[in-house]
Length: 121
Image (cartoon, rainbow, N blue to C red; front, side):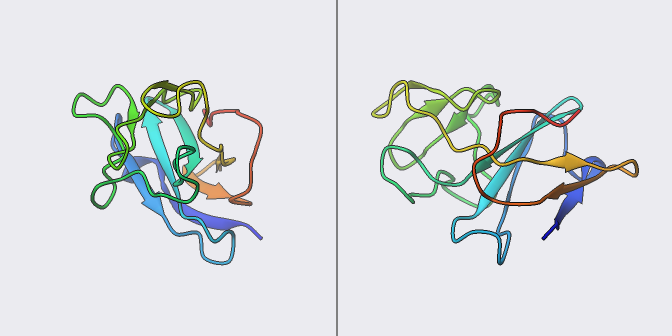
């Protein structure tokens, strides 16, 4: 089942946005845009399985936008790889979600299950 997320132009460069891909997973997901790349992740901190990362709606990034932050545990993750580089889950990684962009600029996911890390261009 293919689920529409949003249009690329509705997601500001350097921003993140959460989605509850109903019927896809019990765990919500989020995306981070960097230029024309979009990285998708399950909204679940590896330090405490199932713990959401954002402290408020769509707030998944550090203040300077350089990394993903789990505000509950202070863990910091690389946006491109999802690997934790600071905090209680050092070396562990977020679970990637495949995101595709169609020819009209719409972002879609087929599943909120683990996917190979391939950013959308």
